Image (cartoon, rainbow, N blue to C red; front, side):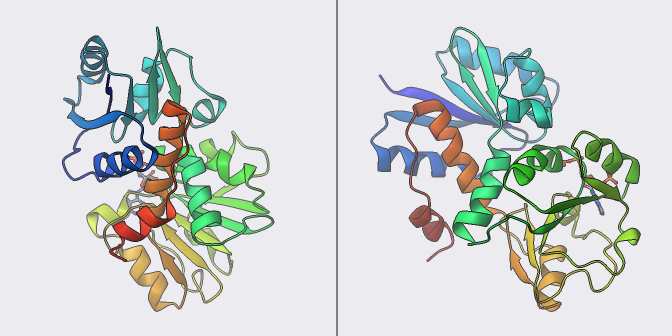
Length: 266
Ligand code: ATR
């Protein structure tokens, strides 16, 4: 019998996840179906319960439900989900189990697809919301030499950094004069056509500038490109986190490189 999975979020209409999982299923021969569920903003738990009653095996949770998905699992979460207090992968057995594949997705994109060894590198992470929270642990585990979290609201960066030994928090102004190997934009600024207010000179020729947003040239990526930095969007992270979710559910790891090429129109 075909096992059912879906993406739950609001909105979900334009997500590439159903297409990606359909491709993974075809390539691996796994008999799954992957749909999309647009849940009301105040109706996450009810929508998940209904999906489970219908026999659903697992869900990916996206904005704005990753924290709600974490709460839904009532503590049955992996360590990497607990670290970010957010769940993007729900797995239903008798009870609901939660995992988070975003951090490993970002690290695999940086290291595998973009060829960047994070060991010893200086990293700047912009943002301190859910997207940033989900990746700090994985970046540190990958061997980052140093990690600075910068955010418009400095107190939020401080609260996040305080959970991880050695991580420094600051506002954008305080970055003046700093140089980083990798600068990761985990803010939602790009969705409203804005970029974090970085001082001049932060992004340069030796920097890999990464925006977790995909499918559009954000103001951050445009600024990075014009400063001579290597600019990358978050499409590879999307594919890699999907592959890891697929592995969590099915125990089979799909190949990602060709699929990513296909998505980029290559
Ligand atoms: P997400 O789950 O996508 O991280 P979030 O929790 O609402 O969403 O967090 C949004 C992040 O983007 C925050 O770090 C926010 O900064 P503040 O904490 O100061 O609000 C950041 N952000 C949003 N718009 C921004 C902008 N125009 N410039 C800089 N940072 C912005």
